[in-house]
Image (spheres, rainbow, N blue to C red):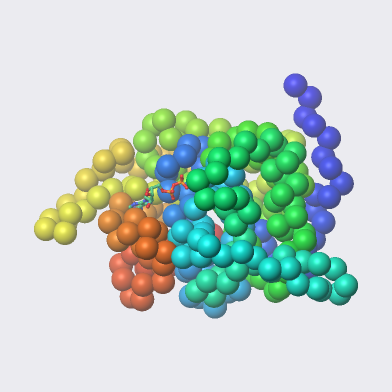
Length: 266
Ligand code: ADP
């Protein structure tokens, strides 16, 4: 199949936004949204101005993870134009496709429709000044990704995977999608999530539940940076459900893990 023509808009700088980092995964459920929320938290802790655009049309998670489930963005006038105001939570600016759907409502988005909605959330929103806008992409490598990647000026992409073979196979497809001629977005690297589990009563043991070093090895094979590993920790899951990403919990081991990964991303 011929590569589709690139729309003009690609590369159009968004005033005030220095970097747009796309966070993706080949498969669903590997922790892409959890990692996005926590990188946002760590970057905000470091003093960066951060926004998150939750573009996961299949299951937007940011409203729950940032405890803004019932928020409805208001419209403000900026230089005579109506702009959507992102919702601020823990100092992170958030827009989610979930703010515009009814709870429990499943929406079947077609590629052009989804990318139009996302374009509006980027170009017709009053993001203010941001160092980083993190884009939580839907899992996979579908036509929605194509249209998003081709219409937005993405600085770079991060791929999240567990070390499990099936997840790695899909992560590999994700990396090649970004590297393909028609998309051509720099791959900042791979993050291994759910790398291992350490029970509280056996603090020196690591159990490699999904396999060992899978994502690290994949990064080496594909010659892209390895950005770090995140263990399976109950408090990471709990913090997400509670609506305050673990990265905001001062001086915990988990917050330090996310800080280290985030330093490798920027
Ligand atoms: P995705 O965005 O890839 O679909 P989620 O971020 O929604 O994945 O994560 C899937 C589930 O796994 C969620 O219940 C989340 O709380 C949990 N989870 C993700 N990463 C971790 C981790 N490192 N430790 C514990 N639980 C995790």
